[in-house]
Length: 324
Image 1 (spheres, rainbow, N blue to C red):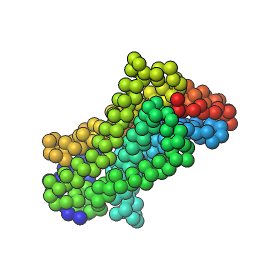
Image 2: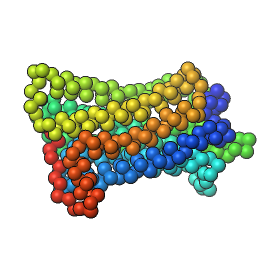
Image 3: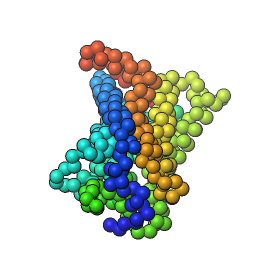
Image 4: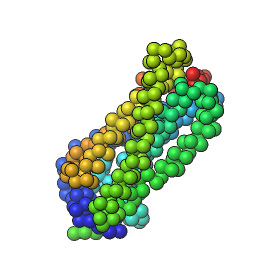
């Protein structure tokens, strides 16, 4: 592993340790958001899972995947050093510390769950587009067993998206500060930026472009004066609107962090721990907002949640068809 002093000085965890007082107010924010995300998405998962029978539709399978990813985001946010637990109170593992640095302290899992969530949202946008634009092919493309395979593929392929975090976060002992420390993969700023930019194109910009395209075409079809979709199943449209808002909120919460870090990599601005951690808190915030979106936009979910909250755990709710 090579080291580039210009980047190391910008991203050194030891420096973060000494300046952690600047972000001390964000630790409880991370903690509250993480707990709320775990609880809220746990409720969403329970509500969908307790629906009667095996009638889970494709959109619900995707939403279940998102809920699981958001729950795990909250759990790993608690585990990452200096997120919820400040450095001075964090107890590093006595064994396997290099692996801990590469997989946990590097925030690999935080970004892994985020990137697969983005691709899942892109898959939902395509699923919604098929339901409205090509309903004749929809039922074949998005049968329950096929949708589960799509989800599995997203989770497996997503393992490589944050691969750079693993190689750029290592264990070092410098000036008595034995901490996980950021480094670089290449001892050349230009190569480092090219690799980073290509990764961002694949894991951020490509799914974002797909989301914008599919929802843009969906909006054109739904609100077109001559569109025959105005008289279609209103539940299909409600699910589509719910999925759109989930996608919009995700991008709203994630883009600031990705944009800021890109500006830092290209030296347009300097790394500021407060700004950087604030944008990271928006990532955790997204996990809390999704359950609110699901419950607000879907009366069936609200009904099922009320039944569960009142103790009617064996609800007789049957999910309606997602396709029009």
